[in-house]
Length: 192
Image (cartoon, rainbow, N blue to C red; front, top):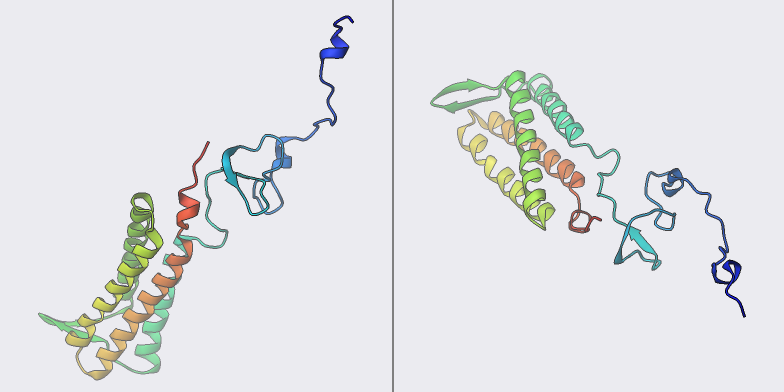
């Protein structure tokens, strides 16, 4: 028996003509079964096939910038409803009397949205349970922010109006930014 190249060379059973674009599905996710997909041992999906280890990305339509912009627009719109439709004078006494106008509402709501965004980003980078920690912190901050309008507002209408403004801004920030936070599993997946 002679050792010929034909006898020792393994014969391929299938041909591989796929390209790198075949690894991505229409939804933009990487196909774990596609040739060239990067996986780590032991990292499998529900079907038992290796899951890709691509860096996690945010879900489309969950932009933090859109949340900050939406909160600002809704806050100014709610201020207009309170002052124009309900004819409430939004004023507070903090040393001197402060009349709350649209520019103040715009700047304050945008500033708090960006601060909340920054806190969420820091927590995502430094803690494993960032979404939970951020939600608890933001809820406590929103509740504590109600003490200012309820104690410093001039008149019952101003107190309730300013408190509602705080609640609208706080709840939109909490609900909006919480949806953009990556889960612990998505952030803690090892990359190749």
